[in-house]
Image: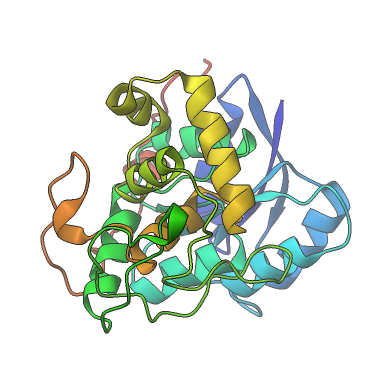
Length: 283
């Protein structure tokens, strides 16, 4: 059973999330909090497996609360899913750099919310197409970078804008490799997998593209995490673009998304909170 904590200041949203989560056979809500400070306290007390944290919280914002939750010396630390009605660039990257394993907009369908909880519980990061597109837009707005080195000292794929961005911190406080500094011991296959991860492909899609097994794909990603110092899949996506390995015009198997102004649509309250209709709800 996946134990979930809700850190959300709107009581009606908490009730909707609790009803949704408790309707599932494999998870339950074990704690609730209405502020960032209270969220830190309940997470420390109940030790949930996953914490759903709203960005806009009183007393302490959700990104700061996420960072402090994951800095705690107490084990186990929760996996954090950040929820927000606003998908601006600063919020997305702030959440990922604070250590969040997933970022969801509040209008996400119920099955997506439940799927995100299960995904992060498996130790994976959920990087949706909106986040991948935002990485591309951020890269396009920044100065160009030098090509990333390939094994043996040769240059990687053509450089792309975005390499000058700051390194991504890892959960241990160190930094992931800076742009243009991919480790020289990455194999050609690992670079290929990293490019596909950067394009937003799932493990299943990578298996199909490279004609390899699921176990082999997971092994490649595990090696990439270890060699690059990236904390999770979210940081691999950022690294793939900021290193110059992948370009927006050469995303493997995907057409580039339309240019946008670095902000996702503002959404209203999720329909499932007011309707009371949740997939698989027990009667």
